[in-house]
Image 1: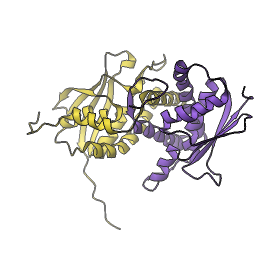
Image 2: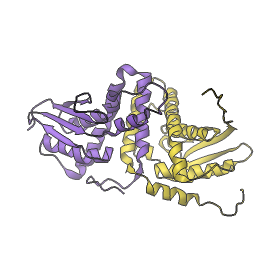
Image 3: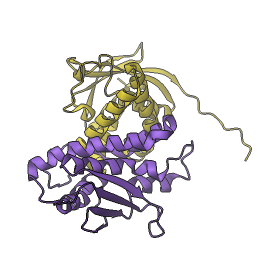
Image 4: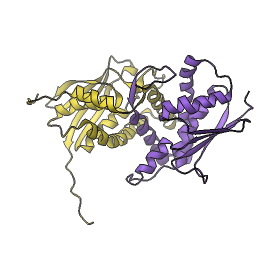
Length: 190
Length: 174
């Protein structure tokens, strides 16, 4: 772990940010997300296609959400991927979903970590029907992570590996660092 | 922490979670199935409305008539979902209600950001209000008041981001 003179208290930053934002009842959000997933399941024959759509939609949301995140958190560039994991778990998820995740299994060689969600507002009181075997219900979150990090020049992969809705013992997203995205210098013609 | 009469659990999320999810869903359907985009969004709103009612009536019990129900939509439900009350309610007392929202949230966001919003399609006002129509319809139909709900933003005295939601009850209210 990188030693710094004053280690940032990410939990406190996340809590303070969440305190300040306008909020709505999470149940409304849960119901809306559930209705969307249900409709997508009707739209597409194939559950994998629903997973893909959820991720795509999440990606677009992530691209938009990063601006507010940066403004409210006041955080600058992360010095390393481990810092990214902590910021995501303690500040990002807190600011928007009001939850904190745990970072586990940080692997410096593979440059990946697991996010363990103890709570998941998207899935509260949700029961998956029988024919949803391969559905990652909350896959929108993976898209949000990818989209948001891409806006800060980080290309990552984010995938569910476990989900409580499927009967797993926990809800876990694996985030893998792929590459830094070089900022494109626009060809000036204006 | 927001106080509501419905007595829901105190768990909350950032309001932009809902807003961004809604807008993204509108964009998704505007792009992938433009011909029934509004219909699908209305179905989603309907589902949310009918589920919300379950929660509300558990706390409150039954409503005595349709006017009381519509007023509840204008105040409590609109506040919980859109963070404001409906600005104006009119009725002909013969089963037609017109709800005026002077600044409907989804329309507000789009008109504010349309300058920077890059890729087409820019969703139409009809697509942006479909969820709201479905929400109202879902609430009323689940309360045993079948109806049709439509949104109007084209009247001379209704300018974006204002919107009129018109409820037409299928049978005479008690």
